[in-house]
Length: 81
Image (cartoon, rainbow, N blue to C red; front, side, top):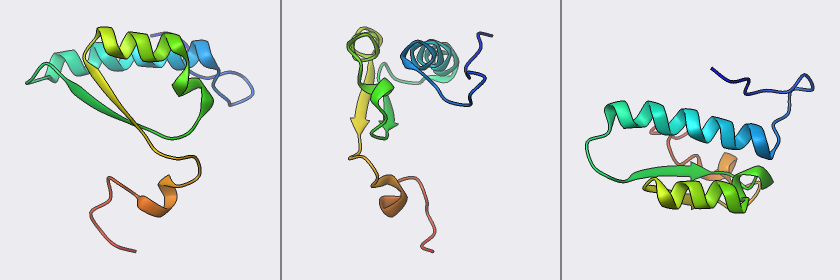
């Protein structure tokens, strides 16, 4: 598996794209339909042209939240805190 983290602990555009390739390989093993939905936060490396084009070519639908709002919405939580 490719390195998905820099020594600094941050991710950059290339590592984000590497993660997307890994994600796509993993979901293809368990996919029932032809499309997948990927929730994104407002981080810049998720919104590069290469990232978006790869998703379009591979049937990954992007749903991007506004920056700094995911902690309020908590879209995947089923319990209200």
